[in-house]
Image 1 (cartoon, rainbow, N blue to C red):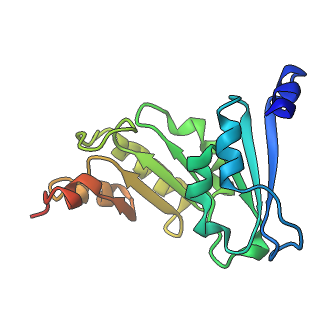
Image 2 (image 1 turned 60 degrees about the vertical axis):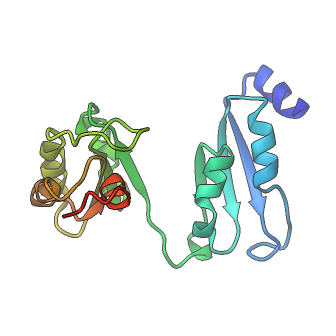
Length: 174
């Protein structure tokens, strides 16, 4: 924590944290408990570099521990996928320059943070625009307010991956 504070006080904005598992690479280093404990001492961007086998198993745990960005090696997984997300009020233009660099866009159809919100219909225009620009092989995921009454709107706009949390877990499915 003292070293992190020194780096931050010297002007560092990011902290690159190498995570090694002793399998993908021969050395072993930090893991989630260290990241979680360091997060208490700084708001710096934690750039977590996973040099571990099958990193997809742990990405959520590293994020929950405090990682802001997670990088993993293509050689360490057989399921690589890069994605970017936008909130309902964010224009597609904010991510347009990244579209050819990712495999999927997650379009939030509610303001993120709370389940049970109403689907914001205006996101259908964003979905349709992304689908037209990126073609049929590109994944578009929609998350928020999806239920049996509006799922067709998202699909007809071009979404091919649907997140339906409240509708599924609160028995709102017809």
